[in-house]
Amino acid sequence: MHQQKGKKIFTYLLLLILVGSINNFEINNYDIYKIRNIEISGLNKTENSTLLKKINNLNLENIFLLNRNELSKIINSNTLVENYEVIKIYPSSIYIKIVKTKLLAKVNKNGKIFYIGSNGKLSKNNFSEKDLPFIFGNPKNSDFINLKKKIDNSRFSYDQIKNFYFFPSWRWDLDLKDNVLIKLPKNEIKDALHYAFDFIKNNNIDDFMKIDLRVKNQIILND
Image (cartoon, rainbow, N blue to C red; front, top):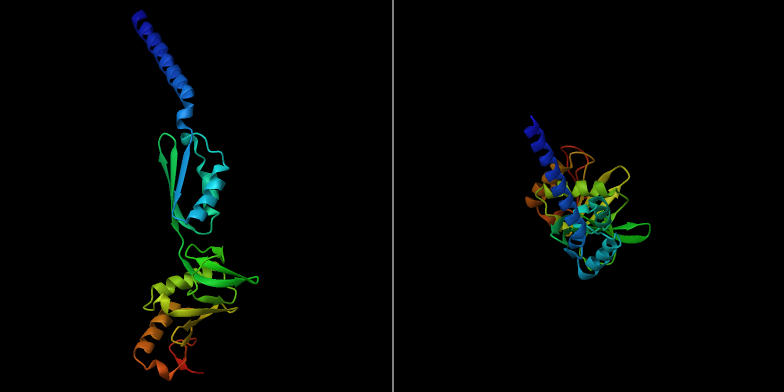
C-alpha cells in the first residue's frame, strides 16, 4: 500500500516538473512564434498593399493566438474579395490567398458609377472594364445576382447582353448586343430565356427588334 502511494506521489511530482518545464520553454520561446511576415496574393499590387496595412494595424502577435474573426472582418471589408484562405506557415508567417471577384456589370448609385461583382458587392469605379453591361433601374444586388444565375443556367451567353433594365414591378428587360430587346416575365424567367433562345435561333433576327414574353405561352414581336 505504501509503495503504491509512493509511486503515485512520484508520478504527480514528475508530471508537475514536466508541465512546469513545458510552460517555461513556451514562455522563454514565445518570441519564436511571433508573426513576422504576412504575405497576400490574389489582388493587384496596390490592393494587396492596402489590405496588408489594415491587417498590420491589428498588431497580430502569436501565430497560435491568431484572431480569425478580426482578420476575417478586414479581409471581407474589401469588396473585391470573392473568397480567401489563411495559411499558417510555422513558426512565424501567414499567407493569405485571395480569389478576386469577377466584375459583372456597371450600375449608377446616387449619381456615382459602381461595379457589381460575382460576390454581390459594389466596388468603386476605378477599373478599366469598359465592355461590361450597364444596369438601369435600382435593383438589389441580390436580385441581379439571381438573374445572372438564371442566365448562366440558360442557353444564352452572358456576353450577348449589352444592358439590363430593372423595373419597380421586379421585372427585367435584356438588351442584347444584336439590338434585340427581350422583355422577361416576372416569374419563370428560366423557361422564358429558353423560349427566347429557340425563337432567335430559328428566325431571322433582322425581322424583329423586340421579344415580349411577359404573357405566359405567348410571344409578341415589335409591339
